[in-house]
Amino acid sequence: MSDVPAPPGAARAGAGSLKEGGTVAPVREILWGSAAGAHKYETAEELAPDMAKLVVKLMVVQADTEFASIQQHRPWLDRAPTLEDRWIESRIIADESRHGLQACRILRDFGETGQRYIDELLAKREGQHKLDAFNMPFNTWADVGAFTCFVDRVGVYQLRAFQECSYGPLARAMPLMLSEEQLHLNFGQSVLRRMVQDGPKYAGSKAEAQSAVNKWYPRALDMFGHSNSETSRRAIEYGLKRWTNEEARARYISEVTGLMASVGLDLPAPEFDRHVL
Ligand SMILES: [Fe+2]
Ligand SMILES: [Fe+2]
Image (cartoon, rainbow, N blue to C red; front, side, top):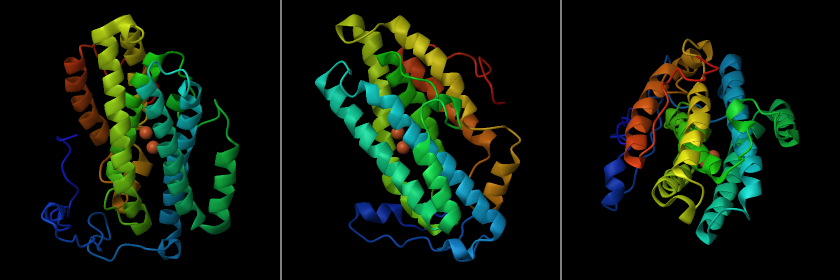
C-alpha cells in the first residue's frame, strides 16, 4: 500500500512524532470537500439529512460485508490445513465481528432508523448480502487465500478512503480496523504463495490458486462500484471519502499487478468477468 498517498493533513496529525515518543494532536477540522476547514461533525444530529442518509448507507454496506465474511470463513475454522492457519482463521472471524460491531455502533447513533438497519443486518443469511463477493462460498482453501488477498484488500482501500474523514466517530474507527485488515491481506497473500511454491505438500496446487485468483479478482474490482457513481461524488463533497470509485480501483489494480507477479500467478485483464463497470 506504499503507493497510496497519506491522507491530506496527515503531516499535521504528526504521524512521525509517535515514533519519537510524542503525542499526536487529532485532526479536528474537515480536510476536504465543501466544508473543508470547518470543525468535524461529531454527532449524528449535526449532519444535514442527506449527509446523514449517506453515512447510514455507507455503514450498512460496511457492516454487511463484515458479517457476511464471518459466514464465509466459518466452515474453515476447523478445516484450514495447518494449526497456524486455523488460528488465523479464528482471528479473522473475531476481527470481522469487531468491525461489524464498530459499524453498528455508528448506526446506533442514528436512533430508530439505525437500529432498524442493525436488526436487518443481523437477520441476513448467506446469499442475501449486498455485494456479489460476499454471497459466494469458500469451496476450497485457495478461495480463502484469494478472498483475503483480493477482497479484504478492497476493504482496506474503502477504509483508507474514510481515514480522517469529516465525521469524527467514523474517522476514529479507522486506525484499529486498518491494522487488523493488514493481517488478513498478508495472510491471503501468504496462502497463495505457499500453494504456488509447495503445492500439495502445503495444500491444493498452483492451478487451484490460479483459478481462485480468476474467480475473486473480478468480484473484488466490482466492489469499488460504478465508475460514474453519484454517491461516490457526494461522499467526496461531504468530506467522507477521499477518492472516486475509479481512482481507488486504478490504484488497487496497480498494487495487485505487482503483487501477483511476485507470487507467481497471472492476473486476468481488468475487464474479465466484470459485472459492475
Ligand atoms: Fe473487516
Ligand atoms: Fe478482513
